Length: 300
Image (cartoon, rainbow, N blue to C red; front, side, top):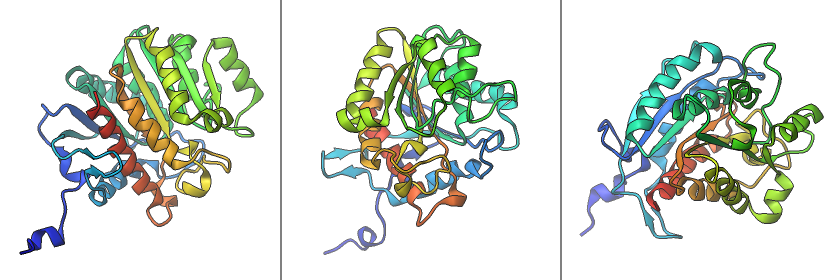
């Protein structure tokens, strides 16, 4: 006899979310929309990602990974939707540093890429023990003389005192960056891997190499997953995505590998603008990425 409830519903990834703060993984929204070089509605992304999680099951048949026993503390959204990147620093650091103290992994749903700076500060206020890995089409090394934006969180972190040797940037695209930014990265000693290198060697393999480099230097690691590293045809909801970006499956594979690393204490997903989304491609990608991050954490 068929259970009618099985026909009408399933246990979804959204059902993993709980208000129990003792859950091993924390999830927080960072709905920052101000300070974006390309004006949009990235602040709507946390809600869109949570909603799309209802369409994800908790079982990966390819690897027989079952997330059904894992629980994720949903800490809600930081109250920053009307704040610029400078004003958002203190409230985001306060929220995320508290979560980092009690959870081995914190997943942060952005928001534009300016949230990466407070994510890093939350792990280590001294910036001397923390490493940063970015999966991004861009260096995010624009000058800060015109203020903080989603185009300069890495530059801001360097100015804050983060050692360049504690930064790795992978997936960078041609004709999406300036020579000045590239020279800054070289001078700072940042590990750089282009999109071509990631296609040739595999994004997950490049990420593993970058993590090994950072782990040898740092006690904790934050990873920024800028969704515009994905091929634009597969990510119309990312205003910064370009033709020639990376396959979305590589993005998922890298997320699972990265979140399995014990020194990765927080990850963020940035630059998804639901107002540009088509057929919920971006929202479902964000939800699948969250599942991959959880699957990686479960490997620990």
